[in-house]
Length: 455
Figure (cartoon, rainbow, N blue to C red):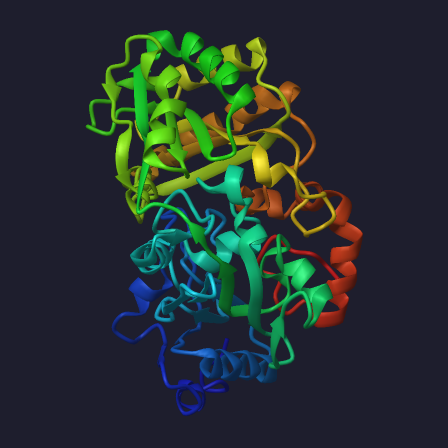
């Protein structure tokens, strides 16, 4: 891009926030996203302070033919939040959260994180389903569906969503809800960032906490087969209030010790929650049992230390309808060969309210009881990138015979988004209708740095 033809002053005069070019202090920090594997250099970064700034930035980019990337929390593993040579619309300063406890509603700006959101909603003992890592952005996670600790009781983040304010590719500000632009509202509940820049999101909030039963129990890796068999049986009859994930992980103390862990959150009263997790606490001989009463907001930080900003990440995931013995054996075999002490294999269990929504009621179609299987390749030494990426791909390929149909759109990596089949699998039976909505709101595919739906 020729900056002389697109001077930063022109944009600076139109927004209240700041505009950074490659020569400005702070540019390198602004362009970096959570995944250190992503290294792209936008021509300009518009650090927006509100919806009017976003509108001005979109119009500026359209007038000058600049590619647009939109950064919310910057957490998405594919690095969609930043582009080379275009305009990065940065919402990270837009972190306001307003709670209406009487109306059971909360509104969050597009740059807020789930840590921001939970901090404000938990003041009132309220919550809606959000990310399992507190540094995850509210907007990005929600638009792609939104798995979280409350999904058994209250559904996914999209099931708690009640309205979205977006800036469209035409630079118009619209509100989407059941009664306003209902086609757009259907599409943004799982269709990702294809339809505009989400500047405000409004959720229904529910009584949760502030104290819940949650935490992690870890067993030695030598017991992994028994642990995963127990987890499979344990998840067959969970109450809606209890969400349980499992993983083959490395000890957080840096020792490199391999562990088999189960992580839980019970959204009901601590008394009922304590009874619900009793079988888990009595099973086997864990090396650590950290399950007990804790603030709900603390449950959402349990994974934070395992996903530090700047670490290099390569993920692959797919749904499993069942967790068979062969799948468990494959997980154990492949995790044993993990080259990095930061990598892991995770299982995120779907049940309850998240599965009582029809696949076509929202754009997010994956509503069957089962598990989302996730390969987390994570490391810090750039020289080991090839071996870590190869391990993640091999582990995923080895599990492929056990996969059900469907992919979780938020976990697609950059390679997969260049493959049309992966994106179509993520949207399943809603693909055709999503393309129709895309044609209506973004016919020129301005917002294409995402899990793209081509109009």
